Length: 373
Image (cartoon, rainbow, N blue to C red):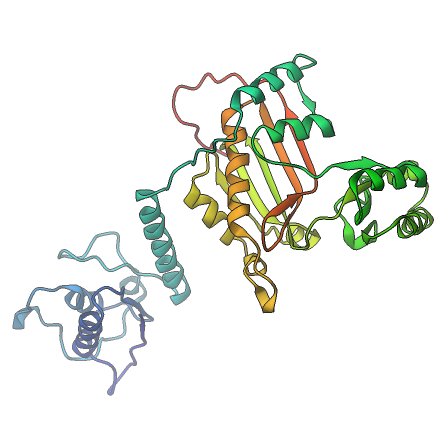
């Protein structure tokens, strides 16, 4: 409930006592709801508001005057640093918008405290092979101080944590593309993976639902005519996944905050608008649920405008598995799953990259703190 009182000057103005009675009635009608009072004139009204907030009976001497408040000077209008007498303090704001924003922050903080009281738990998955992943990571790091894994190595590491990745076979020639399609099975997708075309389906570098070799070869010719030689396009062939909503899952090591899990919808629009949500690792089951629902474009996952709802349970499980991977192995300094197609039943990870590096030395004994800028 938001009450705005703008006292007038002269006869007919709202008296302090009437204002106090109205606020007292509003508070009694909904005791569990906050009452926010915003005044243009602050002079002479603090006592009335304090009286309205108090639950103790008032004596006649405690009643505020029934006369209209006199025009206050500039000094009287400014709230003083001293707290008013009594048990209840009345916040004062120079504008109604600031008061509403303060109330919104108070509600957010209260919700955060309720969530912190029951943060959820980090689930255990029986199919996670932590020791196997550690052995693989140690062998890979023996090659150098830091490296970005290749396709096969990435699939192997993610496989230890129950995250299957759809294979993408290189297709440097039309014949190689046809052979790859026969290996994977039709229908397939033909994609250009050059840096300027990767994850940019809007530019036309992807051909989907190719049902036979004729369609594949025709699409291959179209891509090379539009974008250049195969050496520049770096085309790959991948088996088609069920249609759904494309999302991106990332995990990075932030120098100030530590390991952070990020989630958002795929596409240039989400990136330009910064529609990405973040949580600290390890992520609990409740945090994974809130992470999926915290982005502005989340309605697309829940049947927006009659579309089929996506399998958000499978998406939340994927987030938890990526969180476990990074939490169990500090050598994993970056993980990107893009795109992840979340269908009505299940999901498909179509692209993945992982970067490894020796864990940084930690000489701080306490919790990580934000730097003083």
